[in-house]
Amino acid sequence: MEVKINDNIKSMRELKNYTQEYMAQRLDITQAAYSKIEKGNTSISFDKLEKIATVFEVDLEAIIRFNSDLGPAGSSYKISHSSETYSGLRLYKDKIALLEKLLHHTDLEIKRYEDKFGSL
Image 1 (spheres, rainbow, N blue to C red):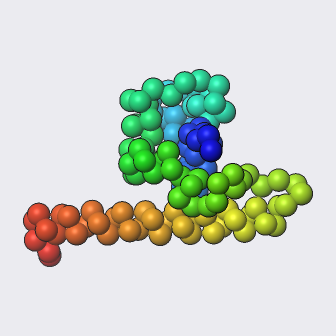
Image 2 (cartoon, one colour):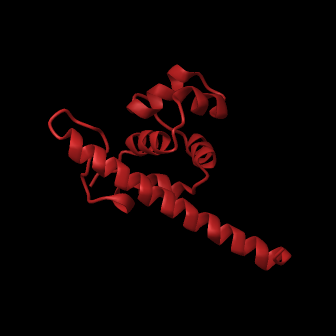
């Protein structure tokens, strides 16, 4: 299965309710340049991908594996006219899965800080 990082970036941005303008501002690029990233019309440098991961507060692997982590290979996160109800439900379930994953990551970070500095 071909990994389309641009689609993963768009899905993660939408799940976090970030606008393209917000992402562009955080990445110090124009909204038009950011839009090209999501559309796959431009190459993404490793440095830019790292910055995107930082904005999303995830590691690079989370962006690369986003679709396979949250759904079967080839599943669509876009709502199509023919299957709007199913896709909308799928998006909802994917958002829950992403939030649970982010919560788990946050719990691990808290534990790491507690181990390092002691608990409050």
